[in-house]
Amino acid sequence: MSASPKQPLLEVENLLKHFPVRSGILIERTVDHVKAVDDVSFEIAEGETLGLVGESGSGKSTTGYCVLQLLKPTSGSIRFQGQELTTLGREELRKMRREMQIVFQDPYASLDPRMTVGDIVAEPLVVHSIGTKKNRSSRVRELLDVVGFDPGFTNRYPHEFSGGQRQRIGIARALALSPKLIVCDEPVSALDVSIQAQILNLLKDLQQDFGLTYLFIAHDLAVVRSMSDRIAVMNKGKLIEIGPAEEVYASPREDYTKALLSAVPIPDPRAMKERKAARRKLRHALAEG
Image (cartoon, rainbow, N blue to C red):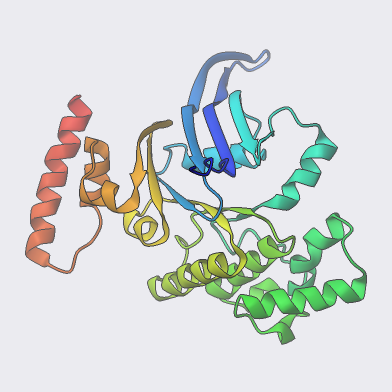
């Protein structure tokens, strides 16, 4: 007798997020809507990484914010562990957020410059009234050690550290409540290439050690491929292709995915030149279509 399939950790169905376009000086009125996310559906199994990829403005970050309810969807369903998030009250949602955290794109803007490293990492514990001050201090040092940051620097401020170090602080903060799901919103795009590799390897190790599930958002298909079990491709608010990472990379179905792949650098100048020429033709065909 075969075992029944496990319920996905996260289920997103027919997600829409529209932003109103307003016009008028004395009396504003809505004249149109920007369809940032337009009928997007996907699911993520526990322990899996789904890479969400697309160009700037494709709606991928908005999708991540809607999943966490940082933005309220216009319509659609978002279920986490079988619980519908879009209908939860404020206090219920606050409790649910212990299980869902985010690592932001910009490690310079996402950390409060007036707070010490220790206070930043401890903030989720304080907000959710977890532990005593002594317990929190011990937990902060443990978390910083786990992400490869010197626990002795808890009384220093974010401006004293590099971008890679700041991102480690942000990751430690995301881990503070032992979440099941972490939305990684372009977590390495603001970092140098050598530091990117370190952060990606750290995220992989943390997933192995703590059984984390990632929604990994990026515009770089090479980065997404190295991180993801499956890849979902977004264009103009719509999900146009989804499948196993190697399958999408090796045999993309959509012309837009092919165009994204053609932008990935390869260590062969002649082949890169040919790829650029092919990309120009493909983009021209997409624009005409």
